[in-house]
Image 1 (spheres, protein in one colour):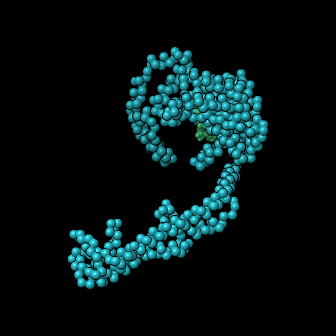
Image 2: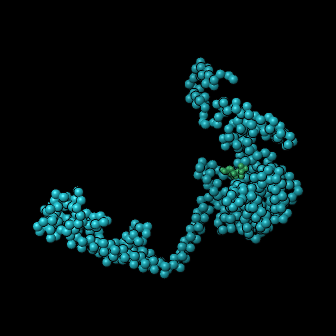
Length: 480
Ligand SMILES: Nc1ncnc2c1ncn2[C@@H]1O[C@H](COP(=O)(O)OP(=O)(O)OP(=O)(O)O)[C@@H](O)[C@H]1O
Ligand SMILES: [Mg+2]
């Protein structure tokens, strides 16, 4: 850190508590730091008092009580009286003192030699004060730059300390563990968590992040991860990449146990983005990034690939994803996590020895999907995309139609079923649904639900209960 107390002390004494944005505005040297500067500033700041005294004296001298000394940018300081009193300043003894400057309809203006003198002193004092401040500024800058190497070192030391103590604090607060990083090709995380999602969950509703293991030993170094939308695939991929980064920067990691054979490069392909200005569409960006990974990753790399091949026709995408998995397994031979909705890819597990299938566990309960966020061996057979679309608020008519379409597609031969779908455009059923109020996106509890909430069954007599039932049924309207 070095020894900087002399400089800190000098700067502390020199600088005013409130500093201007620009040095040229002045006013940044603290009072008491430079006495000659203080004198000049007193003169400048006392101008008000001096001018007020002069005004009183001139009022006396001229016998005009309403005499004022004012200032504007054109005339500088001037003496002003109303036209009715102007004569008093232009005749007799007063005429020797007051020099006429300007006559306006509402005022006559004068100056005096003495006022001119004071004005010059005031502005000179301000100029001088600023010049003194700027000289002091240069000296202070010189003091600081003379020690710049030491200050830079102190800043670096502080930064290092800041990172180390912050990571230590996190490790302590969030129960991180000390990772082992060695020369093996292991990747063994137990009870791993995503540091950011975990913190966000705790902060938002106190719900618990589900910890997951990830073991990529040399004979099982490629994981194919399937599972419904919203189940936690992307989170799992990223948490493992983050744990690798954290372990290798010397931090503790959000896991119960962590052993990582040094990763020489970390590659990730996630999300969708385009770069239109540089001539790259969404799919092109995805492919450029995938190409970089397949061309550059070596056996020590860690690769996470999140949904390759989504931005093109289904079969093109599936074929590309298929070939990428094979290439990662056969040629790159690195540790990799590959998340996908192409469930067909799980067939590769039979053929590729070092590939295994994993899935995000869910439970189906009363027609709903419950996400458990647990990674388990095996593969998913459905993505429950329509379920997630419903959660997201797609219109009910669209959801219902999507369910129909899915059923037809899943039943039959792809080409035939699509042409059948097109023959059977559901224009009228959509229009009909739209008219029904129930088909509108749910915007909150219905009137019937609200009425139900008001009822306290324990307080009702059997007769009142029956009446309530009729009333509620009435709220639903006539039968269709
Ligand atoms: N292990 C976990 N514990 C608790 N919540 C989790 C966990 N993993 C994910 N989540 C929650 O689930 C949400 C969705 O996760 P994520 O985006 O990883 O799903 P996904 O399987 O990649 O879905 P998609 O297929 O739609 O991309 C996250 O935003 C997070 O709030
Ligand atoms: Mg995802």
